[in-house]
Amino acid sequence: MTEKHLVLVGLMGAGKTTVGKRCAARLGREFIDTDDVVIALAGGASVHDIFDTGGESHFRELERQAVADVCSSPAPLVIGCGGGTVIDPENRRRLRSDGIIVWLQAPVDVLAARVGDGQSRPLLAGDPVGALSRLSSLRESAYEASADAKVDTTDRTVDDVADAVLDVVAAVSS
Ligand code: S3P
Image (cartoon, rainbow, N blue to C red):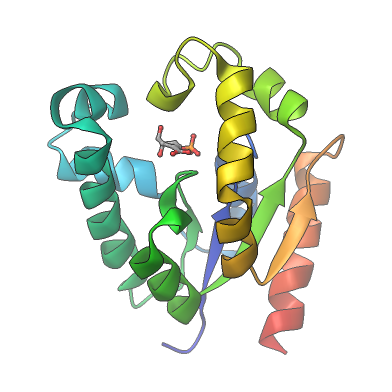
């Protein structure tokens, strides 16, 4: 592979999809969200249905397959990773080897405001703020260990964050 994928990681509500699509447009690349690949692998079942029928462990198995699939694309992509993707050591290894990884950050209250009632996200059910706080503490070290750089998204426009992300790509690629 000549050019690495651009990989966005971070908690739910960090802006991976919105910023990822903007970066993809600016780089002339395709944007792929690992959740969409998981859904396709599950025959179109929603993330909620996958959690309901097979539990989180089944979702994580499909997610591992999704990461392997997108990473093997010969064309460099912009990849938006579901928030829990980098918890898995094999995913971390694969994404680090094939991608430049940027960790999109924001404080928990900002993330919570963005995800609202968190209805489409099973791990946030009932108490989005509490869940995001717990996940933030649990995952901080995995994000830190995976990322080439972190970008704060608080009070910034999508274009501003995309600029910062593309600066990282330029710096790491040079
Ligand atoms: C999850 C994040 C979600 C989705 C699933 C689990 C997580 O993706 O993969 O609900 O474990 O943080 P987004 O981060 O794109 O919302």
